Image (cartoon, rainbow, N blue to C red):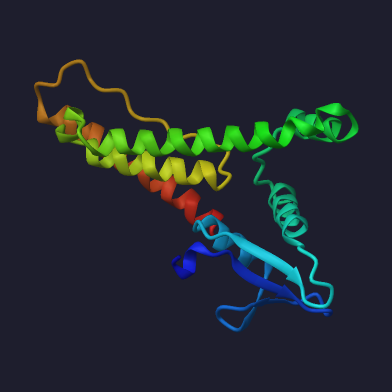
Length: 187
């Protein structure tokens, strides 16, 4: 098993400081969120008691993102989650959420793959820019961006290079705007 396949072990000291056992340095909640966004699993253990604190810290990361305005969870979903803790639906909710997120990840992967491999549309002018835009959108969507990128509509008169150049310029502009939004999220 590769080293990155194992969860990154973070130890919490009595002082509540978080220690990355791989790099031998202290980390913040923001650092842990970045590890997870890059696809790394983490496990947070209390050094003294040995208790697994991963769930507690992941919930704290989500709460901080939501309180900063990175609203991924609509209020009605939050209400339903609270209700699920107070009734018999508790046993169904975790499996439903896990299956829903797995379906979302699979759909995103399939969409990106369709735009890049074996698709005759991939050779059309401007498709590379659209693929980049779509990948950035999917990355932003999983990172909590609320806005959606739009793709420009094609002109019905494709006979002139001017129309396709304008469309390509529109795509580049939208991609640039999306990259600006992404860079603001990473700050």
